[in-house]
Amino acid sequence: MVLVLSVRDYINRMLQDISGMKVLILDSQTVSAVSVVYSQSELLQKEVFLVELVDSISMSKESMSHLKAVYFLRPTSENIQHLKRQLAKPRFGEYNLFFSNMLNTTQLHILADSDEHEVVQQVQEFFADFVAIDPYHFTLNTPSNHMYMLPAVIDPPNLQNYCDRIVDGLAAIFLAFKRRPVIRYSRTSDIAKRIAHEASKLMYQQESGLFDFRRTEISPLLLIIDRRDDPVTPLLNQWTYQAMVHELIGIKDNKVDLGNVGKFSKDQQEVVLSSEQDAFFKANMYENFGDIGMNIKRMVDDFQQVAKSNQNIQTIEDMAKFVDNYPEYRKMQGNVSKHVTLVTEMSKIVEERKLMLVSQTEQELACNGGQGAAFEAVTNLLNNESVSDIDRLRLVMLYALRYEKESPVQLMQLFNKLASRSPKYKPGLVQFLLKQAGVDRRTGDLYGNRDILNIARNMARGLKGVENVYTQHQPLLFQTMESITKGRLRDVDYPFVGNHFQQGRPQEVVIFIVGGTTYEESRSVALQNSLNSGIRFILGGSSLLNSKRFLKDLEEAQRIARSSTGVV
Image 1 (cartoon, rainbow, N blue to C red):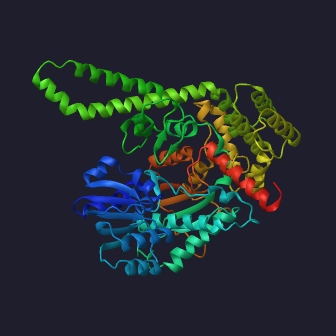
Image 2 (image 1 turned 30 degrees about the vertical axis):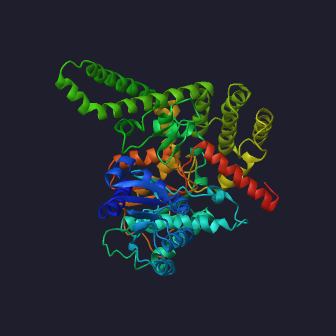
Image 3 (image 1 turned 90 degrees about the vertical axis):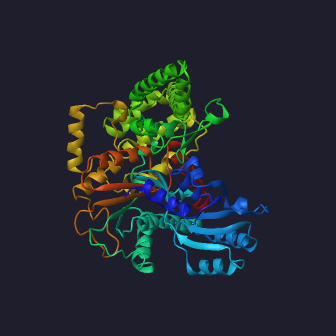
């Protein structure tokens, strides 16, 4: 159950059986699915000489009959219409059509009727309708990700598309693994319940034959939860490598765009950060920022040794050896330069925004009690000229989530101070967050103060002290995985769909967060899987969040809620 290998296997099968020069045609979603697991040089080795988007290739009239077309598309009505037009006037020698999910009968009929020139060689379904960012972490890059936050009274027309996209992605995951799951969901979330029931209907009724793999082992578990159960994790600054890059600079489909943060040469403006393609990143993606600096220094020292030996070319043999090793040398040089650049840029941002100071208070708000001290710390930071607007907003949100019931007067004082210090933030955004993700709306024990076991655990952690004040927070997902591992996930909080129950402890669990995942949570999953507890966890979400994206979704949901109901 390794996502990256699963998608790579599908792409290998698509490309290796079609000999000769090929053009690979993708859509805006499948281009992400392919790019995170396959590099351009690997595509060239498979004789793919051109990669195009299906909507842009529609514009071109030039004949390329020497190329064989390999299409890999989502089975949407829009893509079927593109194909219909392109098959009417074929430009390529042959057409091989692969779809990332289930085609319906109507779509097959349209394709068959459109192939008047008989150029289509094959039509197949390869279930890679998701973006496999890491071996155990996927995202769906769902458009309109703010949909999940809209109050139930607003049922916008796009909400069904949002739910359909998630159900399609979950179906593809389990078809790729050839398993049919038992489904549970977060009790307090209407949208998690809706998606769980629609996924169950698809897997157990509409397409029950397709999902009937006749396997005897215990069914895997699909747990659908809501981002609003843990709004704290996406609001926190991060101090481990992968999560920190996404928080401070941004990662999209394992690529980092450095164009916005500094002046870099063209070939350095976009860098790839993939655990599959970069051994240093794979070894350090979950390490603390302080350790990363030391490890990069070691890498630079190693590189300087290699560079020194390359300068010492005296014989023809030395020259031949240098030429043989040159591609590896260039790759090493590019890698050193990439990681040095990222850490340098992040260090600048940390210093400019005084993030070490801000983060210390954030972690206290997320992990420890003490409302009086917290109020004082947040007030001081709101008054600090060096603290940025977004950091002020996040601090007030973290305080409000923690103490919404305890200190309404002081909360009001913080709201007023935020409004005066950072007027760019629309009034009511913090209140909207509390309405959406306050204590009355959440499933689970976010602050570890409801459940006697969690209270005891927090006390023990407080007595032992923490290794690193900046990374003491653990996402709610960590507790959820622990409960599943110990067989303690409560039915009353996470009900089953239908009469399909777990017959013992599952060995495979897919946890899907409606509203999006964070890299802090994917780190928790990777660490949990490394314990070899007998359960393999996979994390998925509708989107990949950092605090900027989470707040953007929140603002958009607030705007729609206001215009629809005239209230906050």
